[in-house]
Amino acid sequence: MADGNRVSLSANIGAAWTRLTRGLPRSGRPRRHGWTIAVVLGAAALVGLAMLFLDERSIAWAKGLAPGDAFFFQSITGFGRSAWPLVPSGVVLALLAVGDWTRVPRRIAAAWAEFGALLGAFFLAVAGAGLLTDVIKWSIGRSRPVLFWTDGTLTFTPASFDYAHVSFPSGHATTVAAVALFAWLVLRVWSLPVVAVCIAIAVSRVAVGAHYPSDVVAGVIVGLLFTGLLIAALARRRIAFSVGPGGIRPRATALRPLLLSRAGRRRLVGGLALAFRLTEPRRTTLRGRR
Image (cartoon, rainbow, N blue to C red; front, side, top):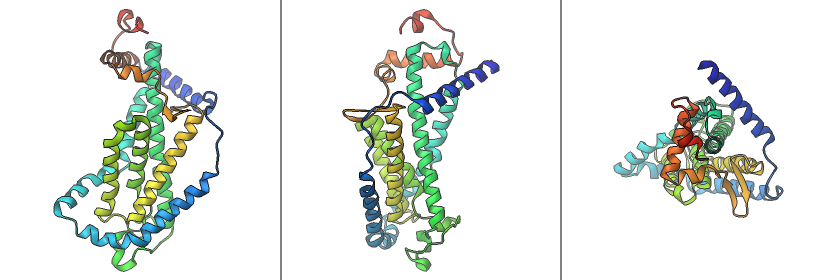
């Protein structure tokens, strides 16, 4: 059993690596970089405006919150930590990697492969955006609101790793922005509750006195840009996403129809059980319904 799992893990990792490095024929129009300067200037303008008109005022706003509002923001702000999306998705990816998918009907295995590709893209988006934000905040060293009365809003201690000097950008805002954009691209209108929760978490960083509004704006920008660029790069190689007339869409040709029916969902669960040798193949139930 252990030997079989090691063989499956090696084969699955090899297949994933081949897929990432080679991909399918590229799809969509050639890349254009003309918009890059406009995006950078627009992002800088938004952060600058927040610094000028919101940062100092946010101190009084946070202190003047009603007890119920303060409790609400304090309760949800912790969910912006990157561990919340990264740990579950990482565990599921690890489990999928050790499954023996040669035992599973091709259509079911293809559906799980599509799910794994999307989950892997999600993991990379959140982790990559978070790491980028960490590098920026460690390099800039902006003082947090807890030091407002001594440092003001524009004091910087470059190359600082101290909690009080890593305010810009907000890591929580980066994480929820990455989650929100990914959810929107995959689920569309069904993602609205997720997006609403992400917005509330981003605002909570100001409400609890952990960040200035400009920190949150910058974190959201980093999360959106990193996730958007990553997904666009994957879509051009038709990995997890593809580019079509309607824009970027998740690649879920095998997965989507199975999710839309109760019987299909049962087959997905059955295929997962087969991959982990929890059941034996039954031609009449799984292999007979390709």
